[in-house]
Image (cartoon, rainbow, N blue to C red; front, top):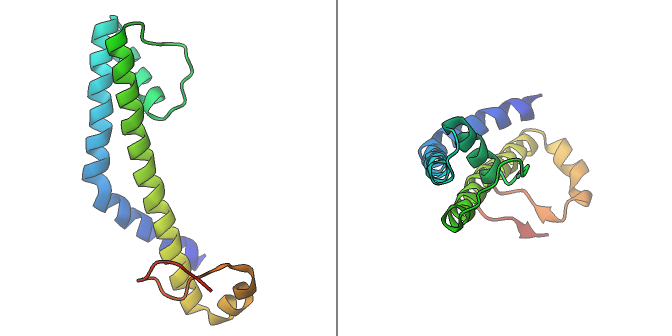
Length: 132
């Protein structure tokens, strides 16, 4: 339970730190989606829905752009969505690594049990993971 609590605290801090960047990327694909919606003659709600579906790479296909300029912007929206997702996933993985390192430092018995199973050293958090 202590690992989960520390993970959630660290993740909250990371998200708050990255919030301006995440909001900028989110705003970028919303604005681009509205622009595509205007080119295609969609309602604002349809354009918003389509931009989130495209940015998250779900792509249901129920709404799709027909004009070449709209298709180009769809690619841009997908790239911005990749960046948004990548940043969030990277922050989550880093947070989990830090929280696990803290948890193992607080419980040395767990570290000794886990050592034969892990291919990388989690002994230090300040340095990148190294081969054991």
